[in-house]
Amino acid sequence: MYSKGETPVSQPMSDAAVRELSPLALAFVGDGVFETLVRTALVQNTRLAPGRLHAMAVKFVSAPGQFRILEFLLPHLTEEELAVVHRGKNSSKASVAKHATPEQYRASTAFESLLGWLHLTGQQPRIEQLFDLVWRQFSPEFLQR
Image 1: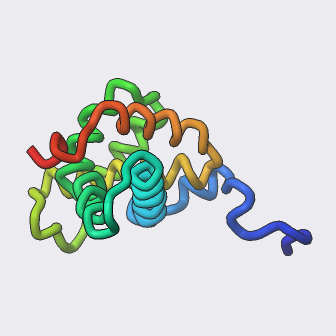
Image 2 (image 1 turned 30 degrees about the vertical axis):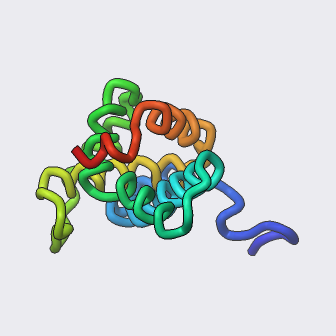
């Protein structure tokens, strides 16, 4: 099945295989991708205590924070990326986060779907490019306004 040294996640999935996944499955992966990026950037760029690191990370990975991030990124996205975002926004979820509007929750799902799609299709440089735009644009305080 896998050659020596190869794991199920070492190779990108085909576009056809990723298209068969639900937007919520893409968002599941994208949530982990974004959480890892934010945590890594915070540790590399700050000297905060663990409790403060968590508080700062939450401002980025919360539905309201991701809503603002997606609004900012929309003009920077390709047509294909916008289609993934649109699909993610239209996916239905049974629940909504406690501290988010339905619009913010749908946008956060769309943003996470985009990151999941990029990750699963092996587009790490694009993920890093988009994250760099976000990191330079937003402070955690701005995301909470």
